[in-house]
Amino acid sequence: MRRTTIVFSALLALSVSGAGLAAGAMKPGLWEMTMKSDAMKAMPALSPQQMEQMRKAGVNMPQMQGGGMVTKVCISKEMAERDQPPAAREESGCQMKNYKRSGNTYSMEMACDGPNMKGTGTVKGSYEGDSRFSSTYDFKGTSHGKPVNQHQETSGKWLSADCGNVKPAAVSAKK
Image (cartoon, rainbow, N blue to C red; front, top):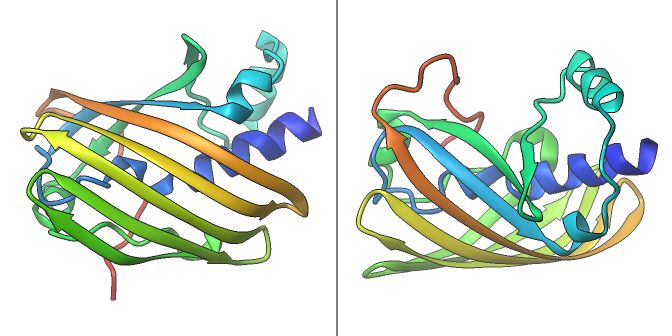
């Protein structure tokens, strides 16, 4: 259970900006994000009891389907209007830098030097209009003291203007 928790924590931290990588080109509202990675393929399935235990611990557990994690994310109007990627949450110890955007493609680098994550990564992606995007992400370093060499593919599709009970993604603007 501990290893599974570490892997989930690392994946969620690594994908913290997945909800806004196409910033400036996304519709505000409810998005469905699908993340597939090497680590998810090797991860054992969680029992319903383990899933409930993680929910009780405050971990928002996404659905696992098709070899990936599927979750709903709310993109606020403010987030959608930014022409830069959101900053990672401060507690992750990660910073996005060298953001470049050209037409419908974007790229950036990520540097992590926090207590739980250390290492570097690159993100490359593209968007189709304002209602779909896809990206690849590669990270090498450590998470909770364990080596990580992660490749992740993320795609997002807009579902509706109303986020319902899903709160806006917990990311902050670059300062």
